[in-house]
Length: 165
Length: 111
Image (tube, rainbow over all chains, first blue to last red; front, top):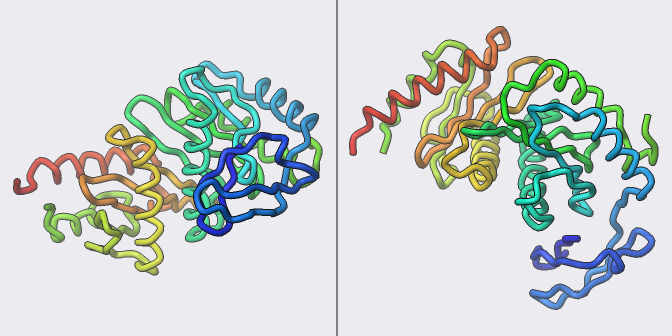
């Protein structure tokens, strides 16, 4: 998992064992600052249910892959092609979530963004303020059935309420 | 370098409600948008993030909005173009119009 130093802001890669009772303690590998702060986590059973929910709902031929990303703990579930490892997804997820966040600072009603590339597209759908599902697809705009499912995904709330609606 | 006047023609593209152009340092080159300073910061930061992901394959970024006045960011050489869509026009019509405009703009720019 990736955590950022509170002092210098540099990235630190930690094992899940260093996260206990919702708190992470580590010395920054760059500036040696001792970090100790609370992080929001998503319970494993909820994650499994969320992942199962998404796998069922996001079963469309136009989808190349998707992953769940949390602002504090990074990649939660990975259903992306093998060519992208978790480090790649951490970087991708962080950049995308930051982009949504900056967009919302200007337009607070923005709940998702799409990056349109020449051969694929990436859609970031915010489930709540910390949790997003990131979908890589082959075509844009998204099909109506997929669009409908994405709109319903807003009803998943694992990080705040601890259960699926 | 694309002349400022050339960018200002974006206002005449069908479906464009507001626009802003920033350079690779985040400086405003041309605009007709509410709150240009904040918009410039958003377009620059989001455009740079998106470009870091898509590189030269990035066509545009879409921010859908509840009022249908969706916001778009297009990379244009060393610049980023931010556009607020008129609520009554389809996304695809606007993006086609802008892509056509930008293709023409990049063809005629002085070397």
